[in-house]
Image (cartoon, rainbow, N blue to C red; front, side):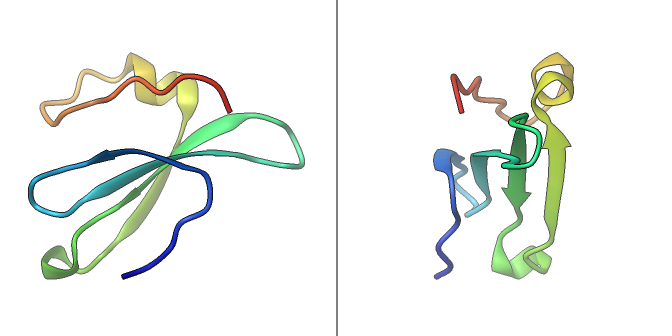
Length: 66
């Protein structure tokens, strides 16, 4: 089990995790998605506005605040 910084906003039934983080240099929020171990545990980061605007088939919890 890994500990992510920021606030965990969603955990899917297959073990994927989404966290809300802030870039300390810019103050901008972003989402970090960590895939489950079975899928390789890949990590992807996306800007908060792009994340909220995306039309994704997967659950897309709307985080609030950094």
